[in-house]
Image (cartoon, rainbow, N blue to C red):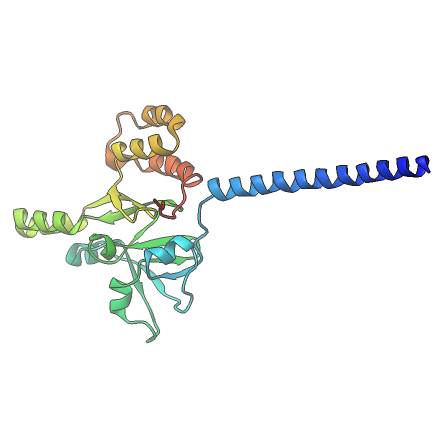
Length: 234
């Protein structure tokens, strides 16, 4: 009888140890998955139309419209101003005014196009150079800057303003668009990945803001692996 009880006890202990090991395994797996959700936060933007920043943050697009991307000519930009890419539709299902003023972003294959209208960057779309919370894109002058150029310089000023461009960074988390500058990048790196601040300063030393693109792309891609596009709730 004692032998049976002893064997039963051993069996129960073995079962308990197996169950405990499985609990530990699933606990570790849960921690790993949770860490991935915290740090692997770069959204995968589906091809299609995004009408709001909230929709854009999710990466889930409206696929009803197959739109055409047209790179505008230099003469068209000089005469009419605006950003480098024009989006059109051969279908009557979507109006030209909707494409021009109501779409927030459009994704074609792997290319992301940001609508300048939403950020007071004149009309049409700029091509994104990074993907994630921090979207670096090339855009024309802000509306007020272009107007100031035109007023100060007349026709020549207007032509210069229409052809001028800058690099901008859109933060999906805040919805803000800022000039791509060393100061802005240093602040974002210090907030999110302070160990990269010294390497960034070394690589950006002596560069003008408009020369920052390769360095900005490198560091924004790193930050995009750590920063969620979702707004921080208080």
